[in-house]
Image (tube, helix red, strand yellow):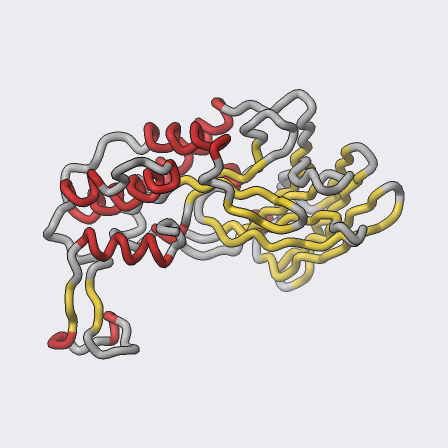
Length: 289
């Protein structure tokens, strides 16, 4: 169910926040061995996808700016062409004069992961690859979008730390977050006023609160997180009053300091009420600052 929600959010973002006319983007999604190329302004990208023996593949990516090679990397140990990098040239950082190269790679494994990075020109003129993180779901959920119409694209995605926090993967909900590249560094800009409508749209797309169980508590956790980012007067109004008291997922701890709950003797396991566990979790994730 949560995977469907993520795809719905990605689709809603693409429909609700169309790219500005000046926001040129070129996408390469390789599906076969061969050479792929794209260019935007004075920046050109080439990727050669090739067999690497023993049924493996690799992808050699190079970036040139004004005719000069500025970045090269070979992404290897790919067991399938499905793991070949998805590339997108897009303007993401106003602090330099060149567009950025968005890179998304599938790592393999259940419920995981798109490894997202951005190749960008730094203030010193050198091009480096900036790691954004590992994100669950379809790569399209993380494609950059210019949501404010200022010609600079942001990444709208979900806070993956909420998956498994209060429910199983299938029953988990996660709050939408907005990531931007500013002065060569990734910044979480979700709480800035210009992105308020992104969060309000995400809340509407969550649908109705589940009737009961762990999924209900996970929904409430994601809802409270976005209410906090919106600066609502009582962000915990629903979470404190409508949680399901029966599930204990995310609310157990070991009374023996330094021991995780899953390694704890049964007679040493304690339980925290959902409102307390939620506040502790959100504090650890930086939502209570």
